[in-house]
Length: 289
Ligand SMILES: CCCC/C=C\CC(=O)SCCNC(=O)CCNC(=O)[C@H](O)C(C)(C)COP(=O)(O)OP(=O)(O)OC[C@H]1O[C@@H](n2cnc3c(N)ncnc32)[C@H](O)[C@@H]1OP(=O)(O)O
Image (cartoon, rainbow, N blue to C red):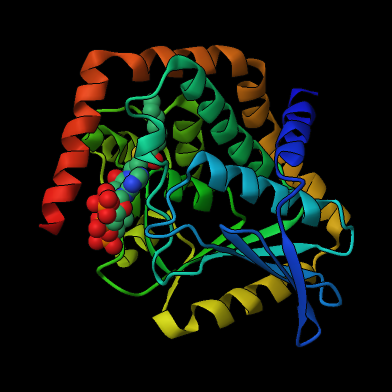
């Protein structure tokens, strides 16, 4: 219920967004920050994250992404989605630090609800989600990938993936941790989360963070062929199996959703945490200069 209600709010918020065109028989609809190439006949859509410069998960991005996803979910012809970045090199820089720094408690609460919604919608999606990770993917970017049914990463040692929150002086919430533990196992997760490790593709593959590593120019074609394999499985049995595997973990967040928001707001509002974020943002700036 709570999930549906929050989704409706987001849908209303974005009802004025969006443009459509038809290209090569595939429908393309786009808002500012998400581009969707939707091939209704094939039942597959490619969702490209397009929030320059680094695809950070800002509140506006989250709103637009959720609206696009909901459009696909509501059209029963779509069975699979490939998630990728419009900007090769960066899949997503994770949560938008500017949404968590120097804002007021009401803003933090609104932002966190949208982050929860993103995770719940992706994690519980009935569609097949294949992630084509064509760039670096720290923290919230990694979480998005972890919600998918299959992850393919470009074989470029410059790209990394992982949950690096502790390096920023913040803590991955329990549902990030649960999703990670269920993917890589307890010991690997404990080690990687405490150190805030980011892994290049070969190591990410070894640990099971991603399922395949392929040459950079083959990420998209590989995603298409993996999708074809998954689509050969009857939807009802795949969906029931997915739900059986995932429902308990999602329910755990749903039942603690308001408390999780309050925890986030009080944690992120602390002076010490704001200071850590400030230091990290300064480091990012210095790296440039
Ligand atoms: C209780 C709290 C729980 C929170 C849970 C989850 C937390 C997160 O997801 S926190 C986000 C963690 N993300 C990161 O640590 C990534 C930080 N960014 C980078 O390492 C690099 O930007 C990246 C490797 C992704 C890309 O490198 P470049 O292509 O070289 O770009 P720049 O570093 O020059 O960045 C360009 C521009 O973008 C700003 N930026 C980068 N990341 C973010 C972000 N996550 N949020 C907001 N803004 C971000 C960066 O500061 C630059 O800004 P300008 O200096 O104004 O150009």
